[in-house]
Length: 380
Image 1 (tube, one colour):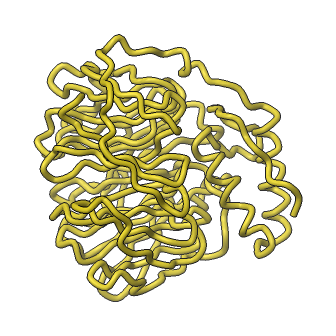
Image 2: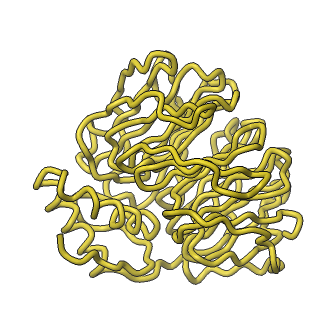
């Protein structure tokens, strides 16, 4: 392999086979691709190399980089920094608040939230990208960025309990997603490919046996969240070159699309309010967060937050929604009653994913550097 390309911060779609890789995802793909290049089929190496080269050649700031918030700036919000052996792409905190799990290259880091230290490492191989935890804090689920597998994690022993294969390596269109049903019985994972129709899939996996089934979707799927009652899966997505995005409500059983809500931009991260009445979706290229009323099936507000919003997490009581801006280097707090940014903290180091502790006191944030920041939310 030659020298790895060092890509600048940017946020725009590529012209390569309909693929859409934005600043955060392009960096992850580049860093992930290098260790896997010798094991991928030649056609994947060629396509990925061309795509990365195009990104480097076309790189430039998106219009979202010009967005600025006039909310009060919160100083010294970071109260702890935990070093890791690699950068983390997603983070989840157990419902009891005792541990945080961070997906990284070939592993999942386990963090002790009380001591704010790295306590264990779960070796997975490949590239676990998104992670979800069961409500009983006993199981975790991670999906591969190359879309080859879903790992079942035993959170009591911090080991891989099962690997469910999804097929050959595939380059992502949007960030693959994984979630678990409210009752813990079913795991759902998305898989998107530039080929589109018939290749964009939703996997349904039995959490007890690992048995899986799949169904084709009519859009490139990204992240997904199960409604609190389990009746719908809310899946962010896009079509074609992903000039804009859509939030889809999909029935898991009987399978079928229930609703589609247009978004202003290709989607980044997403989250539901604790009561399931609203969805918050990052408009990655527009530098805003879409606030969606899930009963009326419409966008009720668009909140400017900064350049390339990525991670989203509500407070446990639903009064605030916290958003990281990857290119903006910030964490913003949105008042859910007014849909306005009420405070912004400058975090630096291109923040990625965010998780809020069950008591609502702290946010744990991953970066493009090998560390996790602990943010005191009372300072926002």
